[in-house]
Length: 233
Image 1 (cartoon, helix red, strand yellow):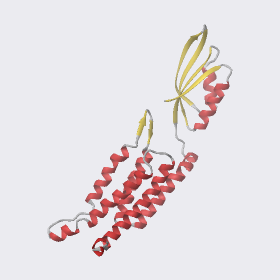
Image 2: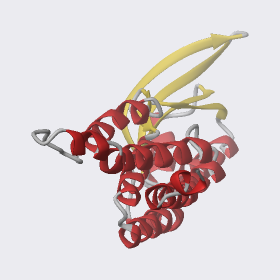
Image 3: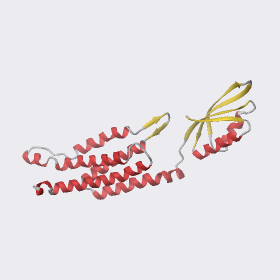
Image 4: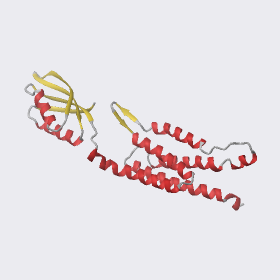
């Protein structure tokens, strides 16, 4: 009885599912540390499920094939559906807010974890471990290295309110000194408690968040500026 339960195929499947869980868990830990919606549990389940589908595709139909001589066997058919179907799960992690898109890296990591699970299910351990190392290192390290050589442009809407003597040139010069480019601008006059105020709405583009923070601090310290509101374009 035990020999039939713990046969060679079952042992191989158990080992592969365990390896898939460990490797997928490593990728999920990085997402968990950064508090993304799809973390350790999601990645682990995707990895184990993909490995299960692959092992079922390899070992699950041996008896059926042995009973029918004319049956054609394609072990890649089920894994191909896993690869295409995992996109629906990844799409659920993507959030689009205006011009900002968040969750693409998490969706990509889920897709890669599914591939790792399939590779482990096929018995390609070295390839799966190598892929996991590359993915984990890229997720941990590239987020720190990328800002050093990749300039990502961000956009903000600055609303600057000041007295009637505050000119648009005063505001734009301060922003230019921090490499912040004004794409669109509008000027309004307000009257509050009998005092005429100027309101500048500026659509800004910049590369470094630190520059924007420093620019806002300098604007707030200007003696003619009364209020600065920072929003998302």
